Length: 283
Ligand code: GUN
Image (cartoon, rainbow, N blue to C red; front, side):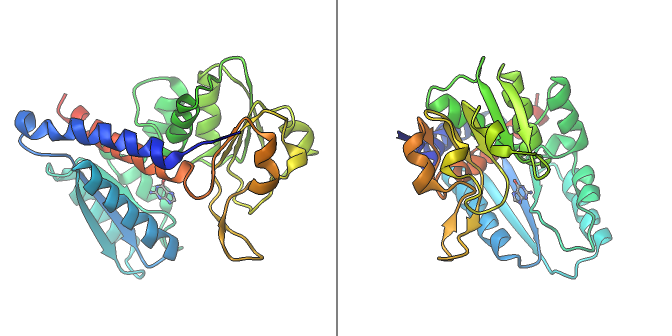
């Protein structure tokens, strides 16, 4: 069984980005600049936003983190985004989700200029993924595809099963696996007899958001399992994934740990997207 080391794979991706970024000032006069906006004090968002700033530092990318109070109005946030869209010193804009309930996430996502949309959430970037036209790809799905590549797993001809159908992970990763020539099935809360579906998977991607929901009986011997979960074990309170790791890992060919699997890849892909935005704004 291979433990897929997302920390190491993301570190080498970040190192490659750092080398590319180091060459930019000579040609363009400055390094890329990512602005991350956090509204309120959601504890997970505080950690994620801090990690994004750290990754920028590791890659030599300029980072500005803007923290707005929980009570910020939707119109004030949209005004902030308009200003960042118009600011030529800013290449990438990320508004950390979830947002407080009084702010429409859909409005925020469509207000960020698609050229600066490092998350790949803008409707035009989503359309680009589904229509195979140029687009910014969402970070977690891209990170998953890179992990598969790093462990030498080509999805072509394989059966891939995705649990979850969110806009952020489930739907786009299913599309990317399809484009990589896997045969893809998506499962969700209404799926009847989920184990009979997941047992067919050569590649199982789990983005269900439920601690330890994937048990050993749901996994085929020799499968590759990618756990996108970031949960708390209800018994121990410790960080865990959507997969019951101790029970499932021995059956797999390769599996991602939580933490240290998909999470670091998401952030490395964010750095890659920031560089991509910088370059395409100058093409
Ligand atoms: N919240 C959890 N994951 C993400 C992400 O990838 N991007 C943003 N903007 N917010 C998130």
